[in-house]
Length: 92
Image 1 (cartoon, rainbow, N blue to C red):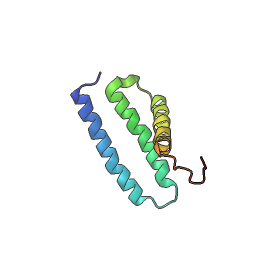
Image 2: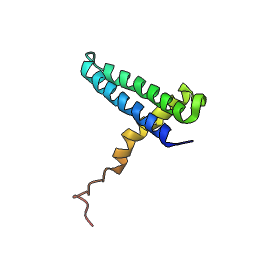
Image 3: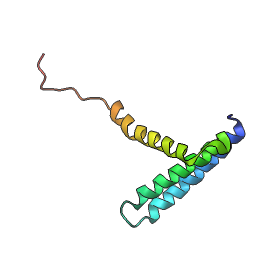
Image 4: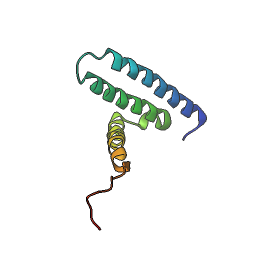
């Protein structure tokens, strides 16, 4: 059940995680550490927001599955949406 209180709470979580994510990027000194830390943060954030809307029924496994799908779409969607340049060597 989505109501304005849940929506406000979820927005606060997202804003807090955005700020923490920025600091994570700034303090990361080992290559690859940023990606790993941000992936873990994304899973935890999805789990907490899922619990805001669905209660304790929402599990960390569901959050991990959701993050995989969202991450995949975030990478693939821009590639699909990118227009294919016309082939100038094609003769009609």
